[in-house]
Length: 304
Picture (cartoon, helix red, strand yellow):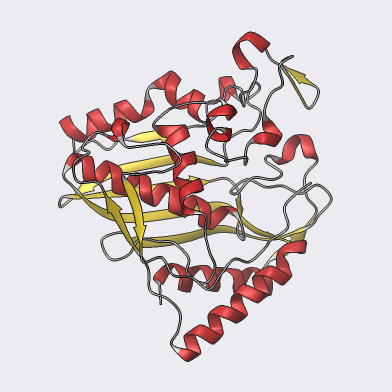
């Protein structure tokens, strides 16, 4: 069994039992419509709960679901795109056969959903969002420098939510904030999300930020510590309910039979001590998920 699966299935059950059914936002306001972590399906109702919290001790377990398969490499490469490469260029992902941002790629004329950007600067990107913000403020470099030189600092915050640049972002960040600190040689991480598609996005984002914490801790000679993920709006789309019920059924049966796989281990190349030098090719050679067993893929609808 895994503690992530326990918390996750409990959250899904509570959403289905006690969540509020609401209409979805209009497409222009809804955020990503086909991307793990940010999907918003126009015209499809959601069932939601506010202010949900999941928490893990990363020394004890690498948090990835085993009650269904999660796309580990895709999650980690998107994290690298944002925090290591610090890019907003969708082609970087496409070169690695990752197409989760294709729907939000600004075209060669600088247009997206009736909005316009300077095509020389923003064609094939998502505008002033995610990695663009990280690069502008050198967020990752500043975090690592502060962790090294002022480990007691209480201002280690990475914010992707910059009001000045929201109008020119193809999508305002869903996971928008992370806060870091060190206690007893352990690197702790608190992550905030304004919105979480629980079937698709939440498992994906948990893997991304857990890996991010593991890698930074590894580079600084620290142990990974407490990881807390807070979401303002945890929701399941009504056309995902059958898939979630299937996952719950598989989980309950595996728990009763004692056959739910254990959490895998994260292997990090011990020779790499610089976050910016980890291999970010499709092979992802410096990071491996060892012994990842799961109950199989469950197809969930995404927006079209």
